Length: 174
Image (cartoon, rainbow, N blue to C red; front, side, top):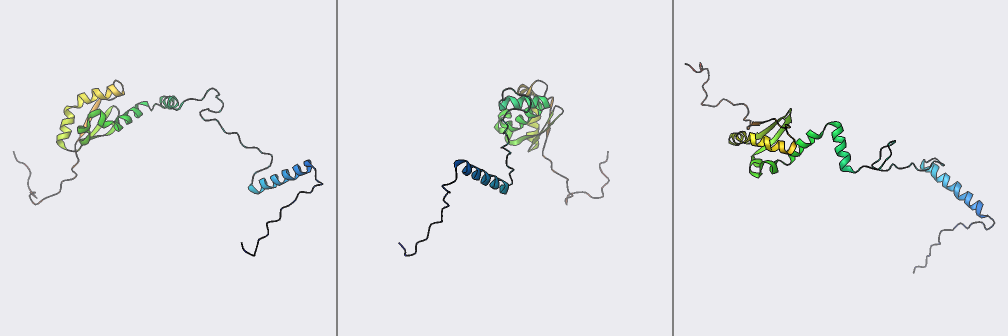
């Protein structure tokens, strides 16, 4: 132990002459002062927390998440778009892993599903399977959702002029 000992902080002793009610008043005054320092106004209790799942003014039991989402989607007309979005996410399961490796769904508008293929040969293959694909998609999404499949091949971009190009030619002749 060291020779220097620190004196403990002086503890305020309550005045034995104060009654319990006076001590309570002092504690209340101290609590109000602390609340003012924090920016809270004395006398205002905590705000009631809303119970999750209930809408204000509607009462009743809370709704489970799944049915609530389905109800919202039906009310907003989002069911078809959500179903088509599910097709985009499950593309490998719908068309098979080999075809999914070389194709991907691009857009869906007005009943037309646009599929991009990574080569001309795969685009031809998907065009041959288009009728079966429409049937399979409508089984998942509901009859008539997909009316047509449009297949696009890879875009090669603008063709440049090479050294084997004829410049200044007159074009094809009969």
